[in-house]
Amino acid sequence: MADKETQLVVIGGGPGGYAAAFLAADLGMNVTLIDPGENPGGVCLYRGCIPSKALLHAAKVIFESQDAEAMGLSFGGLKIDRDRLQKWKNDVVNKMTGGLGQLAKQKKIQHIRGEAVFEDSRNLRITTVGGNKQTLKFENAIIATGSYPAPFRGVEIESEHLLDSTSALDLNDIPKSLLVVGGGYIGLELGTVYAALGTKVQLVEMTPDLLPGVDKDLVRFVRQRVTSKFEAIHLQTTVKSMTARKKGIEVAMQGPQGEERSQAFDKVLVAVGRRPNSSGIGLENTRIETDQRGFIKIDGQRRTAESHIFAIGDVAGEPMLAHKATHEGRAAAEVIAGRKVVFEPAAIPAVVFTDPEIAWAGLTENEAKQKKIEVKAVRFPWAASGRAATLGRGDGVTKIVVEPGSGRILGVGITGPGAGELIAEGVLAIEMGANVTDVGLSIHPHPTLSETIMEAADVFQGTSTHFHAPKRK
Ligand code: FAD
Ligand code: NAD
Image (tube, rainbow, N blue to C red; front, top):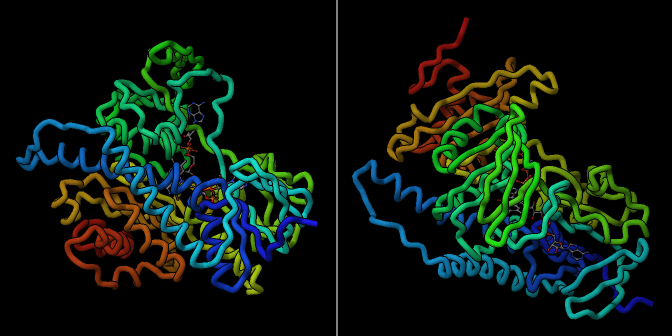
């Protein structure tokens, strides 16, 4: 006999898990949510999206005040009260997670603070945060256990100066020097934060460019900007060894021509990807399968090989993004409620919150090339945007990837300040099956950055008002 029974158990309280639990409760289910956190939130709210964006906002304020000198505005020397900045960031997190806790109560979701392991395909064993053990029998389950930072294989050392994204976000220190290993989302976002706070940041990326896989024309402006804000960017470079020192870490690197260099840093932040939390949760006691990267195998409805158990979010595959987790979670909850639902988005947006931001949705040019899909990519440079000029930020581009015959919008890519907000229009256009005429004829307010989307659509027709790109006969 199990200690408790539930109609639906959700394992993991991140943006996938809590969104699933909340919708299931709204749809009338009896829901139990298991997560060790004091409140729902998971990685995204406690040690991911929210604290990083809070600190990136602080970085933006710093950079904007520095850039303002070009307008004749000078704010004097920057003083950073690290304790207050840390508290402000923690307050943001606590406000958001506290709100989720309230919502869970209002929706009568039972939150068990603990970690769950499958005993079999109908029962969980839970170890609570206080160390107690209990069992729970369930009718349906949603696995939303998320992911953890990938270990830096081959270069393992023990050092208090070695950071991962979680300890870097804690902001226990503003080091004089920082080496960031990995030029992906986390390396660039957190490197930007520390560079703004005055740390001399160097970055090592093993591939030939930052953000491998992202269209090069979108990455260009970010590369230019971080090159001016970071002390050095080492591309096609690998870390050969790290040696723990009392006051930092000595790092030996090898560059593209095999050249070797060694340098000591106060801190080293390793951000070389994330791995799914699929081991240690008792999947071997069920028929649930994982792929070779550890992601749980699921079908279009997010069902695992056990038809009453679903998996969503980072543990269920790429892209490892909060909004993808949320929408998968909501789809799974609907399926369990008996609705005929499939998770089939035409576009999952991605945003790198660097300065400038990079955002894309739908088909990218890289993907089109790989899949041999014929497309026409049209671009509107922000240098031609009135709003960008007023912001002093012509370092951006808006691109639309178009199906040549029909003019249908297949993908949108944007680089520039606020690109993360602007991309939502691209998502809507793709999901609605809009073509360039629909977007070009939709009146966008002036002067705004959103006009760059309208004008990129006009570029396809060769009729952009502010950018001369006549259609080739
Ligand atoms: P998670 O948020 O990882 O939550 C999983 C939860 O499950 C955790 O609370 C964990 O403790 C719990 N858990 C694990 N095992 C068990 C168990 N056995 N029993 C009970 N509970 C368990 N994404 C974006 O879209 N935008 C961003 O700006 C962004 N910024 C990020 C910044 C950083 C620094 C990091 C690290 C990530 C960022 N991400 C961002 C990615 C985003 O955080 C994840 O995609 C998202 O959190 C995944 O949600 P999830 O619900 O799958 O799982
Ligand atoms: P990532 O996959 O984005 O980037 C890892 C980078 O490290 C890659 O560029 C890779 O080439 C490089 N790398 C790998 N091994 C290396 C080595 N030995 N030496 C040098 N470089 C190496 O991973 P991440 O930055 O750790 O972020 C993990 C995931 O978290 C992201 O993929 C994303 O899904 C999510 N995330 C999203 C956001 C956002 O949405 N804004 C922000 C942060 C994290």
